[in-house]
Length: 204
Length: 204
Image (cartoon, rainbow over the protein chains, first blue to last red):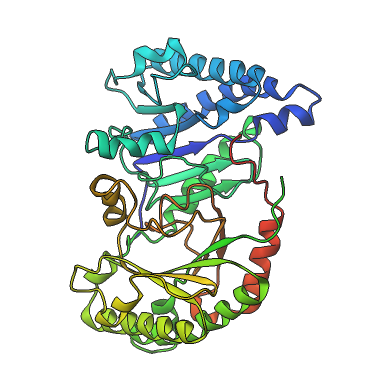
């Protein structure tokens, strides 16, 4: 069975720090250059009719990094969430809101509002935190996030790095070698073209 | 941080049915041609000093296939388990032993014995079955299986297909386009060479 358009796509926008270093900037300065590509990608998804997207903002592991990096990636997530909400997305932020690194400004997105394209932004997310929900409440803490059809990762890494392990079980995984701030619409189009060629038999 | 040799490697030996069809055989006849490559791969892992390998035998989803296929992939798993145990591996079979499709002959491998290279064979495995252990007993049903460093999949598919979702969270994922029965030692060597080039910073 060939699929046409993925219903739900995950994005791992990796490579901001490497991109900054290559330009002689401090590592943390790279994150701000990831916002505009994210908005461009959001518009492309909406134009194509994708129903839901999930974006790897930052993880609990990431918060062990130097504070300058934490400040900048947190700010980038806040800016992004407000801008896509302003553009009509139904935003949901998924992450441990009880812990200090969760940005205060993202609290209003802990429940999804609106009827536009669903945008799930992972902020202070951890796969172990997510799975603990199975025992505590009988469901994942990321329970409102549906199963992923396709995951696209920038920056050349061929691993999930803890990204939504349950929703990822059957997802096709496409890797872009370019660093995230070098996003180009052709990356997305090539990922969709590739996805159409994949067999979606799901083990049956 | 660059890694040298992966401590634990997962193998997804996909493509047996496609391989059989290309040779004018019935689909199910392909599985028997997957055993010898698996033994060759086992020997290579042992020679290299890999401590643990996990092999995707068959899943609960797979058991919805026609009974001729079930018979053949079950038989291939049984033959493989006995042969690697005979060669000194510490075999553990991971899967739902309560359900009918679990091969009776694999019951003796439900606890690991021996001190050789660890071989985890997934048979009648299901990721949901695995995760339900978190609630029932506070640990995964695949709990004795350690975290994966590298996953190699044959047959061109770029997805995990439910393979050990928790142990896979940080694993690097390498895809071989050739079908599994066309296994060649160079596939494994290229995967190891590639793995050495990957950054293993794990989000920190």
